[in-house]
Image (cartoon, rainbow, N blue to C red; front, side, top):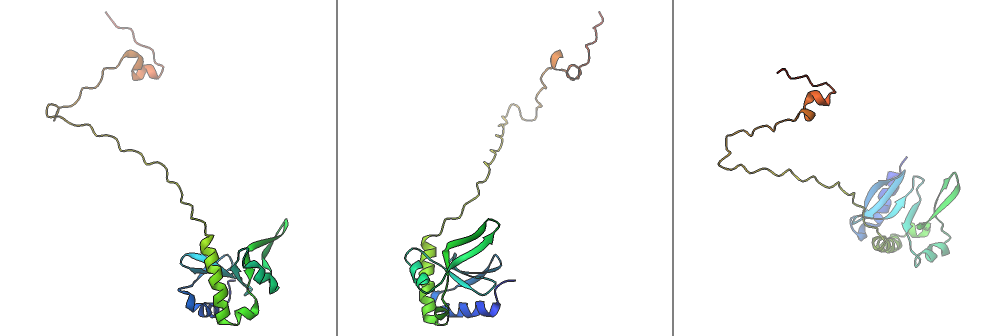
Length: 164
């Protein structure tokens, strides 16, 4: 189940002043993208997380917010790059735009370049042999075969004695 559509629309409306923010599918939730940079995600449970760095993380921690986390067989994993947005900020559109603006700046500055798959080396086309005026229209004679290279010899057949 993806994030609730009405909630996503509300968040997009609040961020309208930032530019053309798009909602894209992101695992089982929704990612928010501006100019090709994902700066926020909304989980299927309706929690909004923004990208943080060392300078902005204390603001989230002071508000009592935790980083995004998930559980694996080996235990709980925290992702320190994403922190949940406090509810009071979510309810104030101006404040939400300010916090989202910081997240956009951080995400753009830390965006890793996309890895481009290396294509296999292209085969060079075979060089065409120039046909001169003297050989035009004439067939080239087939090279003579030696007895060792004849088809019968390659298949293991014995040579027949030549009658004299």
